[in-house]
Length: 149
Ligand SMILES: Nc1nc2c(ncn2[C@@H]2O[C@H](COP(=O)(O)OP(=O)(O)OP(=O)(O)O)[C@@H](O)[C@H]2O)c(=O)[nH]1
Ligand SMILES: [Mg+2]
Image (cartoon, rainbow, N blue to C red; front, side, top):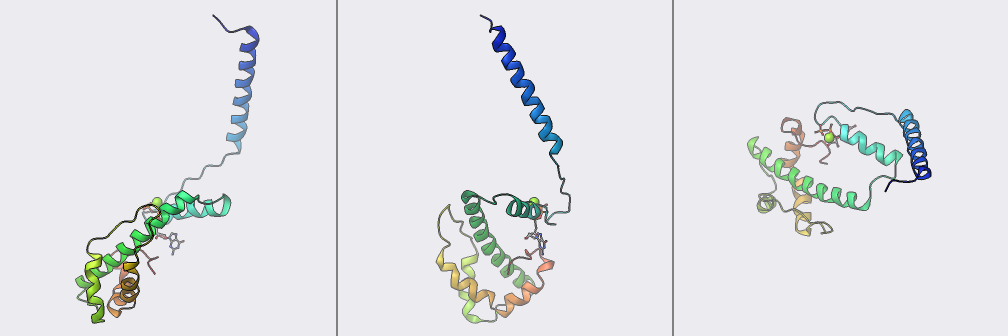
């Protein structure tokens, strides 16, 4: 059974209208190609665009970032401890030595799981250690993220 003439005409009009609308939209659309070396800030520009010109990030995305931030913090301290040893530097506060095992195998957190509190004091204390500070200053030699601080 075929469709009636009037139904076909209506459908046809609808499609033509849609095509016109799409054309209009595409004419106004501006496309930007972000080029740059690795780590030069392409993704960051895109994130800033979203924050400044759209509604930003939704709850789920923010939760995802929270998990990434935690893993970045621990990863950075792990990297600093390794780089410190390779540079013949050492922790200068003897109290800090006991914290090293905490950074040998890093935990990950699940969605909605709080940052494990057991890392709070060690991170604060290690960050103040002159050995870690000196290593930080050489961060450009071992790809330490420059936002670690
Ligand atoms: N100081 C400074 N740091 C920035 C700026 N933009 C980005 N960063 C930092 O540079 C690092 C890399 O930025 P990304 O946006 O991930 O770089 P990308 O170009 O997307 O890197 P790939 O995806 O690996 O190619 C991050 O640690 C950012 O926080 C900036 O304008 N100034
Ligand atoms: Mg990127």
